[in-house]
Image 1 (cartoon, rainbow, N blue to C red):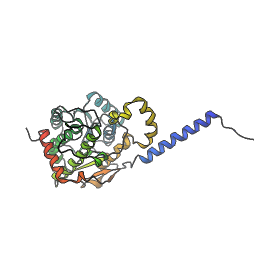
Image 2: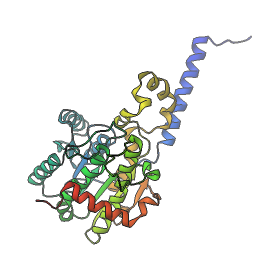
Image 3: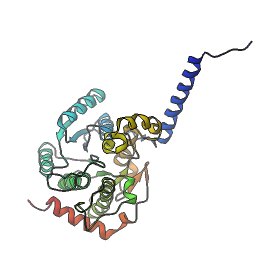
Image 4: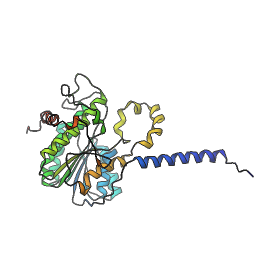
Amino acid sequence: MRWSIPKPVYYASIIATTVGTSYLIKDHLGGKKYEGQEDLKDKVVIVTGASSGIGKETARELAARNAKVILACRDKDRCEEARREIVVETKNKHVYCRKCDLASQENIRHFVNRFKKENSKLHILINNGGVMRCPKSYTKEGIEMQLGVNHMGHFLLTNLLLDVLKESAPSRIINVSSNAHLKAKLKVKDLNSMEKYDPSEAYGQSKLANVLFTKELANKLKGTQVTVNAVHPGTVDTEITRHMTVFKVLFLRYLIKPFIWPFIKSPKQGAQSVLYVALDPSLENVTGSYFSNNEISDISDEAKDDKLSRWLWLVSEKWTKLNVT
């Protein structure tokens, strides 16, 4: 006697198998999960760009570990929404929403002044906020948006907070970069992309700047017990991809995304490397490094250029008016 499987059951089993396989692939390719159990009671943390994506997931995990977490975000309403969600989930009431627009140096200074009035310590600074491949635009100071937000904004924010970080040592700074820096060049003669603007090249340059900044700052912080490292979180499904053409076209988004979904990290998976560099006890004295998938990874030859990192530092000081009181 032959048993025949009804077509609806047959097709349902294929779909279930496909979906299950996709989840297994995504879990396998999602990278290592940070397994540390550190309690962050009495620790103060700032996470930029914490209203969504990697920043939000990082802030959620830090709050679950009892840290006092400052969500530094451009959009106050979305920040407050994220804060409420994190507080309800973690039962940690010490999560605060503060406006910090990385495209406005005036606003960054205002954020720092308020932070210092409200806090005397800072143990972890996570420079996560950013933009990617956006149309040509400029910050309030006239700096190309990707360079201005991804690098200059965090350069200014970090330097203005160094005194508190030093007083709170041992403390850590984490710069979220990208492997996009590997093929990037710093346009020394057209750093602000005035002569030519390519969204992809400008993004790569900003991520290269993150690595160069990390190396130079690590040199300047020797002996302070303040470490600084850069992290590549992987290819992550977050709102930062909203300017990419393939995701802007509605038809292409829904046509392509199901096929690439298993190979793209979720925001929670993307946060794991950030958490590792921010928390793992074995990295207490590791500084000036670039991490990928919870391991120190090699950087480009351009990123290894000490002369270039010093040049960028001096330009960044000038463009942010760092030493102007």
